[in-house]
Image (tube, rainbow, N blue to C red; front, side, top):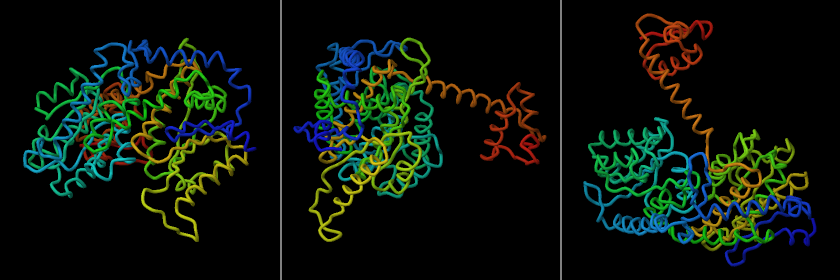
Length: 519
């Protein structure tokens, strides 16, 4: 690898301290030329998306997350107001928390935050809190699943803090208010507050759609306030909407800098000059390495503890957007780009051995943060600092992979700030949009997720039927399946679940078919 080739493959935005290094992707010199028709379409599609063209034909919706950081792009004055007006309300609300103007009924000030959401409604705020929010803002906890043990653990931890739940502000985040995991989390939280002798509503706010089930519930119960969540923002791209901005404001994070950072990256990556468009070049690299079919996984390795959740965040953004059975023409394509990873250098000790010497079914994405620490550096080995070692492990791993034919992308930022996190979020959002166009799919619907929700509802219906057919008599799964006209294996799983949670007794036979269940 010559330095000249490296220099040609390095895209830099000096004004924002960002660079994208594709030198280890081995893209052919004429690659963009052969892809020009697809590139022209991708640029055109993104222009139409930002102009408000219907981008999710399944639901007849526009997709407007790019307007959130530049309201002037909004296609109507009404939508522009929907973006701008909540910003003022969020800042005003957040300013009243530390002063006690908005306070717990017991007095004092709110010191803890409990965020109740699922998917993008939790993962975005989790990423931001992990990256930026643990120094000055409110201590934050998350109900991001319907796991009762996990919720119990968080409540127990909160109750050990000064003031416990009485000083904890809960944010319930759900566009519809009907998402089961979020609804369950809210119900569990409400019961926990009540068990502590507290009125949940006087400690709660909601981020939700106008007229949703959650909006109506918040009004009926008397929540402190609600903030709007628009239907033209999808969950996995909602991090810079009220979903992320409300928690950020309460955590004393400069969300305006994050919006500005995202806007800066948007502006850079509108360029029709391919060599200057980082998001388009990134999408083209994904396309080339996966042969336009996602044949290679992407391993994300951020070399900074504060970005530990970035790979998880990208996993949802990319896989939910690009994992589609059909293309826009109705042709079965089974597209996707699998994403996994964790932080460097910690996880080099977990899976780099396979990355270098095992299956060649991936490419790596390194995230470099150039500045080691905000404090003055100290040496740990002669003249070397801990930051020197972190850089050494990044560069060494990158070269060790490349020497063995493994490709990689390296993205570099100066330090992790609200602004630079905005750069990264926007970069990958736009790369996803470009890539979806290159492979001719709809990035903004999720039929597979909806199918999973429907299957869960079917099981819950079965579970309730099984409950109704349990008696003091010993019955096998096949006995109850015959009674309700169900599948014996599904009935067996329902019975084992009920037994594990003390709703019935299980007597094991030699095989599962011979197990019996009774009250």
